[in-house]
Length: 473
Image 1 (cartoon, rainbow, N blue to C red):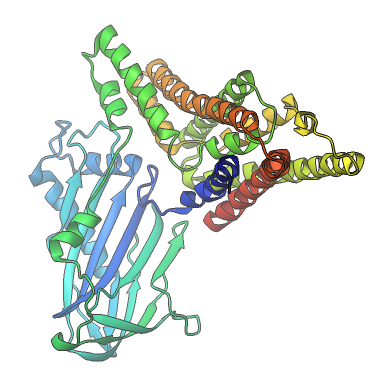
Image 2 (image 1 turned 90 degrees about the horizontal axis):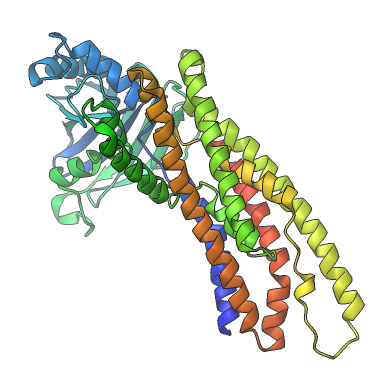
């Protein structure tokens, strides 16, 4: 395979695979509470690691509740009652049976990880518990049911990890037939169902040689909490920031936006897929990046207004998948239209020149950029808002610094635009280089076929957006 063909193939693989990372599970959701339970095994029996991730807004409410002396800071003596309250909720809600016998559960003292002790600041927190259930080697049946109700609970995840000490032979929901699955989800705050697992716990000498997690490793894996917009929120709450300090924070927001654009989604795959199959120029890359970005800003503001006025009825995290579904539908239909028109054009070109043996420039075959397509794809690519940016805007409103918040969101979005524009320019330049150095007829045919391949990629991206959004609804 020649170099141009390799580059084209790698580009298409990247276009197809990048959207798949968008399904990677993220426990942190700024507007709600999410819990993750991991059931693992060791030489003593069963270990249950229980993690509650509290988003920015519910965490601020909990900090307010725990701040007894109203000094604006959460001390250890104040958050200990908060841990006790949560531990009581979990202890009352956990119903565990081992081989038909009810197991009395004690979540233990627990651990609270605060991003900040400041009550006023919007920031997430972690609450983690870990406890063991004694269990001898052999075959056992475990029924696990977590009926504890947490305020603003949005998602529950249950995961079984064997780690060499045990082998799962059956796993099913109480209302389902036999189905072996190690990971289960309950979304939109739905009540978790009882889960039954049948497992074989090995003797020490029969243990499989697989890496097992130590308690420290398990705790480390469960306790990582990153607040990407923390510096922006801390800057907003700083009363002594000053003019030059604000300029520095705007620069930081620009940088964070640039990095944020590299995470899954945010239209970069769509920009690349479209421009690689058109005779796009730098101005088209700039315009497409700007349309995606400013649509993104608009969606952040709209979602912020919904969160302010209708948060009791509609969680932004539940609204975002519907926006993704609408955006994916638009991209999918646009992709189908592009495939149809470009195949028709390509077929007409082959029919017209099928009997010709001379060389000529096939550049006219490549579809010219349409401003309507740029506008539609740009809007659909930016429709899905960034929840973290919405939190920054809401925090600014909460502090009475709405103008500063809008400036930070604008700088953040310009950083996102810069990344998308640079990517678009690289795609445009790279495509021109491929055309320039394409010598043999096979490579030329591949370049001529790029418009159809890119249209197909846009269609697949739209379909994946629809599928992923449907899974989240």
